Length: 282
Image (cartoon, rainbow, N blue to C red; front, side, top):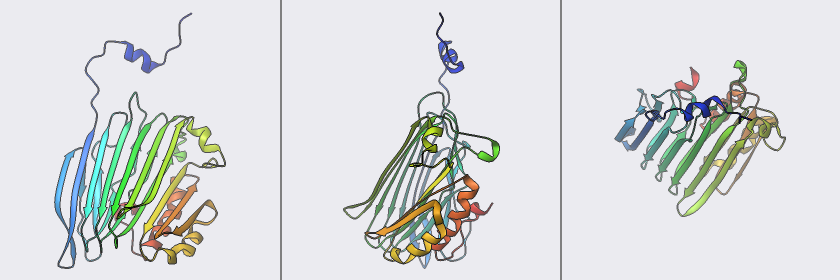
C-alpha cells in the first residue's frame, strides 16, 4: 500500500534545484528633538524593509514602515529597531496590513526592538497582521523604556478575511512581548496558537469563535485616568486593567472591520483625540 503524500511532499521529493528566494529586511532609525520638532537623525534600510516620513505640521512626527515584498511566508526575516531620544514625539505605523501567507517550510520571523528615552513618547500603531491558512509566524516585541518615557502600543491579529470566506484551519503563531522600564520587567507575554487554530479559536477560553484580537498597552504616569473610559469603549468583547504604571487591554471581534471599529476610538482616547495616521484611514 502506498503512503499518501501531499503536493508539497511530492515537490520536495523531486530534484531539489536552487533554494527558493526569501525576503529579508531591516530598518534601524533614531529620532531626536530639535528646535521643538522631532527629526530623524539616523536611518539604515536594508532589503525589502523601508521607512518613509510624510510631511507633518506640528505635533508628533510620523514614520511609516513598508514591506516591499508584499507579505511574508516561511523563511522570510524582518527586523525593526527604533530609538526615540529625550523630548522626541513619534508615531510609527505601517503602510498596510501585514499578510502572513501559507508556508512550505520554516517560519516567517518578525523582530521589533524599541527604545524610548526620558521625556520622549512613542506610539507604536501598526495595522493588522493577517494570518492565512497554514501560515507560520514567530514574532518578538522588545521595548526598553527609561523612567519618564511615555509609550503606547497596539498589535492586532486577524485569522483570515471572513468577508472573503477565508478561515485559518491550521498554522502556527507565536507572539512574544517583553517590555522593561529601567531595571524592571514591566510586561511579559507569550501567545502561542499551534496546530488546529480554527478549533483553538472556537473555545470560550480563547476567542469564542471570533477571528480578530488585539492587545493595547499604555505606559505613562496618567494611565489610571483612562481606565473607565477605555472599558466603556471596549464593552463586552474585552477588558482593561491599570496597575504599576501601565494600562493593558485585550479585545476580540468577529473580523478585522469590527475590530477596527473598537480600536480606533480606543486609540484616539489614549492619544487625547489626536487623529490616527492617515494610513489607518485609507
